[in-house]
Length: 451
Ligand SMILES: Cc1cc2nc3c(=O)[nH]c(=O)nc-3n(C[C@H](O)[C@H](O)[C@H](O)COP(=O)(O)OP(=O)(O)OC[C@H]3O[C@@H](n4cnc5c(N)ncnc54)[C@H](O)[C@@H]3O)c2cc1C
Image (cartoon, rainbow, N blue to C red; front, side):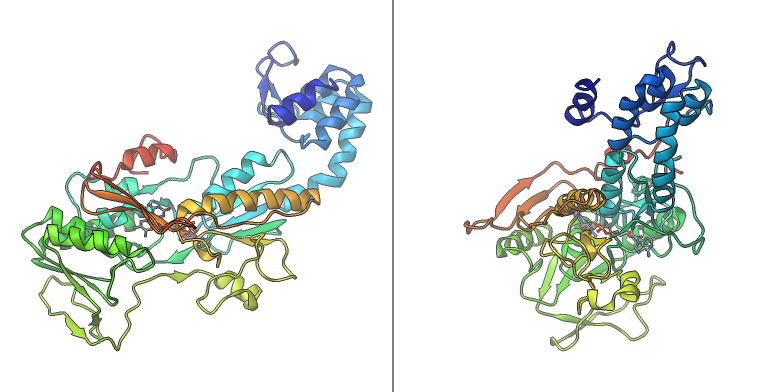
């Protein structure tokens, strides 16, 4: 035992709480158990094994898939008093703490789901993970611009993916306070339409995107305001799908996508000219005080000379932290974080933030946040184990995978340190539905797209 257990758990990273079936090892055929269950059943000489398992994350409450007995019940039934005493002592000191103090992740989009999954996979009985999300479904934002202009050949339902049944449950708003071991803020930003849905339910989102796409189809002239990624994608998609329509893209600065190397602007300007999109730069649009008509009647878009600013960007969703620790919120409403990704407040060492909501120096995208998720997961475990925390370093330059119409797209990365040239990979392999089936499958959407 002394060599095999550390080898299996430390070297091979076997989950000490995994349920295994050994038909001959337990009294009830078909009963599942963890290694601890089997140790508790086997003999009273297994105390050393049980102690080792407990100190390496085994949880005596796991392993009761058939409701026959958990590990302590098994020791009791087998009258192994030594094993039972060790586990009862463990329960007394740990069980309540772990049950009542889960690690809470707030925000179940790209980054929140990633960090919750990484934590769950590494919990090893030390804590539980609670993911709280206000939308009924995972919203695959990357597809929203396309689904907001295209109608035929798109299964809009698939942009709203159910969280895996059995793992996630509904909790009505305000259904209770949670005493937590740690809180992870992954609440992101609120975008402008059509990337922001009017409600939190799937059907509202599906209906909204379809109506939007129908309106685009029925309009003769289309004006997209804001030359960020969403504006560029919407304009290029619309013009390629409906070449007969007049399409204008208005941007307040001399270059679109101005956070990137100027070559990206050049590339987009060329693509606009190729498609016949009217690109208006350095101009701002005067928004009518009552908003634009949405009843299908025509209207003129009035240009200004640069005195007004229209907010087409993102609003950080940081209110929860603002009420707890106002000084941790920066002037743009993002959450200030330390290198460890803890919020910048000595009073709350157990509150972390990552993804779009966190004021890291990283580019706001799902991809760099995968590294942040790993650091937060490691640091939660380090905190529990009383070990020093790790620092997050921004290593990747800003990059984007941008569609420039239905099939054309580009992978663009700003120059890496020490280089003057960006990475540009022009591609022509896009599909109308943006590969939504693969995303649906990868995220475990299940057999019914309507759910
Ligand atoms: C059209 C488009 C295309 C994109 N394409 C790419 C791409 O190709 N690659 C890439 O890396 N990035 C891409 N991005 C950027 C990427 O979508 C964001 O960086 C990413 O969504 C950030 O993830 P997040 O989890 O931090 O925040 P968000 O995605 O903003 O999610 C925050 C979540 O928190 C929830 N929430 C907020 N407040 C609460 C609360 N109080 N209680 C419960 N839940 C709450 C929200 O409902 C939401 O689900 C794209 C963005 C857009 C708009």
